Length: 215
Image (cartoon, rainbow, N blue to C red; front, side, top):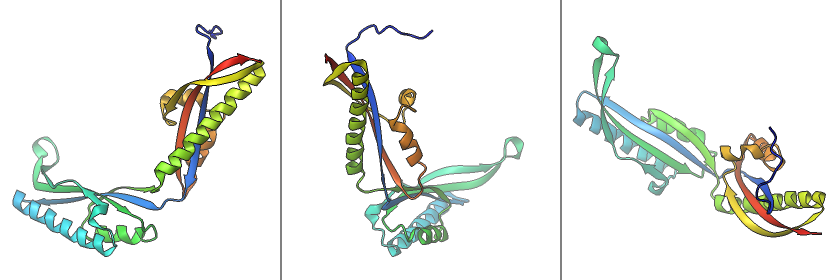
């Protein structure tokens, strides 16, 4: 049944969303080094040697130690198969790293070189922008403008005047809680921009509450 009664009428709520696109100037590569050997000592030594070689490769790409974040070496027992067929393979030393680089043109060569240095898994390659805070601020201001424009339209159509802002709620534009707003204007454009190649999309969304005044 369609609900037509407003229990506590006080004004108007309006949702606004906006996105800002920017060319990426930063790449983050998540990778993992694994070495399995018969004994823990051999596994640690193999893992440390690989990490040392990896560091040399990264420095050759002008990536400073500050641009590399990594976990300590960990040790686990490695097995293959199940039940009676289960076979002990040895001890696996593992270390995970995240690398940040501003040299996007050299990314392909970097990935080739880290694999040649002994990296077993490339977990992800993510592009980003350094000025994300400034872009987020622009998106938030545009989201507020979009919410205000929508509220003004509703107020004009209803024959009332929009009053002061009485409530502001920051919203995650990708949250399921705001999916009901999708398709009502602002966020449809953001969804299209998410698919634009070669761009990083920074989004923001807001719900504004306005008082109403008689015209």
